[in-house]
Amino acid sequence: MDNLIARDKIKINSNDGLIIVDIQNDFLTGGSLAVTDGNQIIEGVNSLGLKFKESGARVIFTQDWHPPGHWSFASAHQGKNPFDPIDKVKGIGPILWPDHCIQGSQGANFHEELDVSLAHLIIRKGYHQKIDSYSAILENDGETETGLEGYLKSSKLNRIFICGLALDYCVNFSAIDTVTKGYDVWVVYDLTRGISDQSVHEAIHQMQEAGIKLVELSNFV
Ligand code: VGL
Ligand code: ZN
Image (cartoon, rainbow, N blue to C red; front, side, top):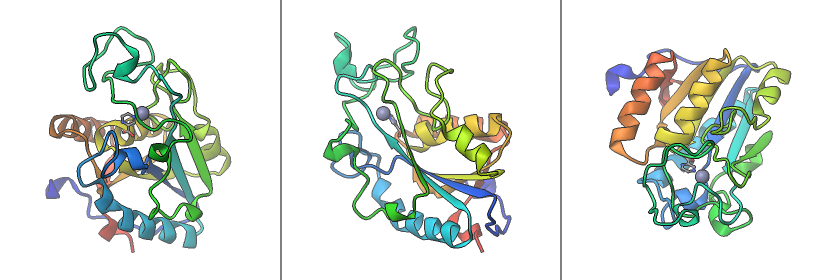
């Protein structure tokens, strides 16, 4: 892994944005879709977020925000179990999930140690009953926009850093969409954790192919 991390020293400027993806109770210890060791990134995310804010850059949080009975939940499909693959349903998949991040629930709240006061923007996604949204930019139907792109554009950002959960889903899809929109995209690897080793492996490969760079907290000066 070490040889995939860029060695660049990064000085944050006012055209930079940090997207902090889905650090919500359901993705953390005790949550319904807990990501292994997810809690370990919180302290570093807070310190990087502060660095961005103090450097005049933008800090954006995303929040997975599903209505009860959302179609990404296995419980909404007869005979399906969490983590079953699903295809052929536009806007959903490739995986069905346990119920998680239900609007207004404790599981959907940000972790209490996450410094959400750093936020310039909080973007909620996945709130259409029949469309999932792994990406912070485009929902899984490939056409419904979250609105984040307009914000990036009007804030004149050109370099976007991404951290949070989960590396193999929402971080990966957000990074791919952002680079596709023409931004210079960096994933802060040690401030992410993934759901499964196999899909993390695939996600890293995809990100490399797409020209997304990996860095670590220690790259920031
Ligand atoms: C996520 C699965 C379902 C994520 C969200 O934040 O990566 N994964 N919903
Ligand atoms: Zn979700």
